[in-house]
Image (cartoon, rainbow, N blue to C red; front, side, top):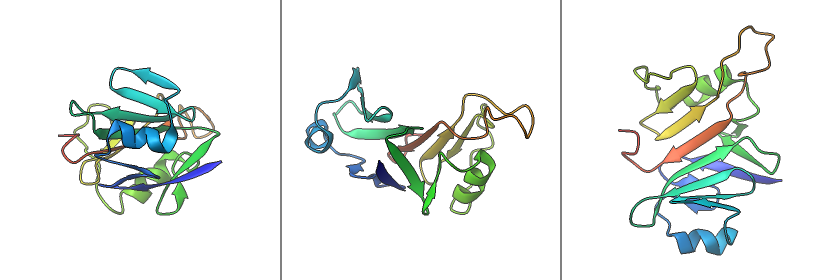
Length: 142
């Protein structure tokens, strides 16, 4: 299993914001998935390129092939409330986001968290964890 550290304003693991497509391919090889400016690796390590062909957004889905850590904590393994609290130590989330609850966007960090559903009760397993963690280039979430 791969372990990738989320570094706001820099990148995730070996992938740096602003890297070229060829730089990414020199690290990961040819993508498993490709649709327009989005490519994917390792069953959930997604990379979006801007119009200049540079990495502008990195999104990691929950995967058995890697972990995504922030401040040493696996953001897919922690309960969603704990993740919001952890990231919230460094920035506040955009409370005006119309999807708050499902998504949390920390504009100062250019970091996003997403889950497809909210838990209906504390015992409900669905929605207890985030399914995707994203990191973007400065200004992406403006």
